Length: 425
Image (cartoon, rainbow, N blue to C red; front, side):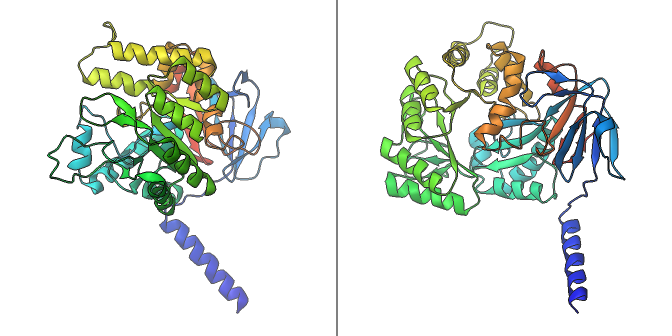
């Protein structure tokens, strides 16, 4: 009876996995490629990579490996094998603003339509070689990112590994859509909370809803056309971070002004998003506290293009300021991680951020590190993501050329493996 029950349970588990779309992961052997070393500084030749059960079992000469029967072998001669790329600032529930304005997406587009579009965006992202995303806000689509995350993890749909932040937390009157007749209560693209008790409650609600990260807006403009100012008080920011940390979560802060950045850093956030107007004093504070900058240069570039600027002509002053701030951050020794704000521009073109990091002063190797080792550290996953090393999660891409010398070679991955499964070939 016990054996019959056990067999029945195993059959049910197998059927459940099949219904969830999970696919088997046979052992996989990758040979012939130049392999990025674990520190991301050089390419190694003569190394094969053996993957078993979604993890890198071993790296070394093929002749030294014990290869299981049934292993699938892929010859990558002439290619470069890298860890899967990571983008720490994405919005799968948004699409480019030259297709539909942000306000129209939040107010007019059906959430089911937005979610369906996000499924396609997730696939495009994965096929572009980005195997991990931190999605920083659904912008009016509630907890849809949690559903997409779980559908991917269960094998129902293809996509990158997602760290979801659900709804960003904003102060009253400090987010959008805005500018309507005050008689009307309009939907807001985030969760409004005020006061220490109010922001603590919001964090708790988001964690209960499935958030992996907490995001809040440290500054924003309070009226259309007004300059951005700091929004939450220092005590409110401290409460947001403390409540998140008590549940083991980390916090990201949207912050463009020096005062917003200063308060967020002192509150203990892990990352500053954008940081476009940071002073040298604030950049020094970020370095002192070990806070990482996600510069979102590609979004800043896209905003100017949508406003009529044509690349190749003199850059608008705003874009010049953004790039100059990034260069000062780099010179100040601030930790830089790849975060593009994709969704403002098309999903699947995430590599544009790495290209801009290089154009603004990073070496190609540093930019690649920002999208692998540094990004994995921000996520608290430096032991198993962002590296090709024994025991790491088998998130890998193969590309033509040498990304340590030219990040443009990352634009067309030939092979994408996530969690040991071939996703693009």
